[in-house]
Length: 244
Image (cartoon, rainbow, N blue to C red; front, side, top):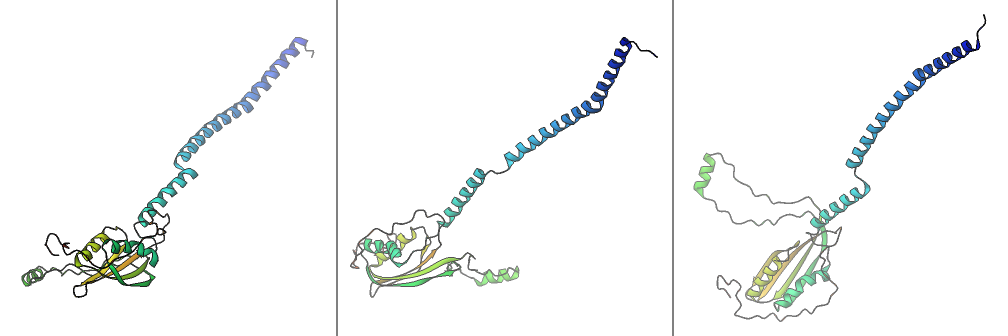
């Protein structure tokens, strides 16, 4: 069977179209579909990445958060006194004894120890009436018990005692000034002897090593501590009571 050149060209062209069609149907179309699917998957991953980047803390954010937490903890810890030795503690007391012309007779320092702070066990006087006791018993009311507050936090504790010669009014002024210190230095006990004009102050000092030292007193400066123990008789310890 003889085939003309024209017929041969048409057969070749039809075959070529078939091959192209087969390539498009079985190769190009699946690849396009896979490409579209991968593009959609890539876009979804990019969206997830953006969401994660927004919600995931970066190093800078973590550092800022850490710095803020450190400042918060440091602020709370700075409410407690930085550990101080005997010479440093005198920078708190001697300016007041000099201010009120007190004569320091003796001092005593007890070595620091680690303790769990506990509130003072001295409570305001509570009055009890028999009629109230009977009423509470009739109503099955349990009697209230006083529990001393305490904390399980461990702090450094030191105890200092000062005995000075002064007047009663200046003894009261000294106590008032100490209450204005607003720190973890407390007068746990004090007394005044009117026969010898001697006052005793017992200080409880709670302290903890600070992470960030703020508002630290300058213990390097020098000051003159002096006092004769005398005072003006016109000074009133309790102006509202008129007691001199």
